[in-house]
Picture 1 (cartoon, rainbow, N blue to C red):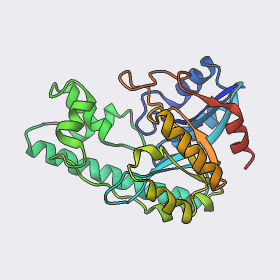
Picture 2 (picture 1 turned 180 degrees about the horizontal axis):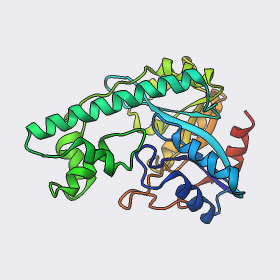
Picture 3 (picture 1 turned 90 degrees about the horizontal axis):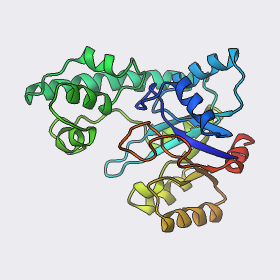
Picture 4 (picture 1 turned 90 degrees about the vertical axis):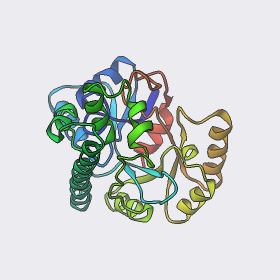
Length: 272
């Protein structure tokens, strides 16, 4: 029995629709799956509608992923077992999504000034009307126009943090995210701590209320995995893990089931 506790759908920046992802998870013989789209729970809403009419042999753990506002480090926080109907959570998500669309328009304006002619409405179409629109969707429009061959090329040339078309987006502070997740009945977990680049930040986040660490992640090496497992044990934190699956052919894992965690981690999470 295996699980994957970090996946993305077309509701944010994944390539599979929520229902398609669910079916792929069943084909991969996963016992548990968590949908953790960026700044939206719309993928989960779609799956819950599907589950009303069909009996799938898989457990769904509701989740979400937030980017947080730290100037020099990329800190993402996952929220598990959230009440996706919580009013305060939904109101805040509406604010974040509105800012994402405004940011997209600003990036496109910068691109047009740089000579890369793309259209906002076309970006929305290519995003398959994703709730949580972002830079990968803009990259798809640039590739379609023939300006670049890969998403990686787009980011390296234009959209990375120091790129000429980069626009920062509205983010909550780590404390705000942790509080929001807890108010929605959820468990805040630090995503891929090995990608932050500064372990002192992890200790700071533990002090302000993070309850878990994503110990198992495709970009963690063996030493990092052991280090964060030891850290979670020392501070009695929830241990999670997942593939960070986006269904992108050039990004491991290309399909569900290639990177999994033991189902007992999901079972413990589902009982909290």
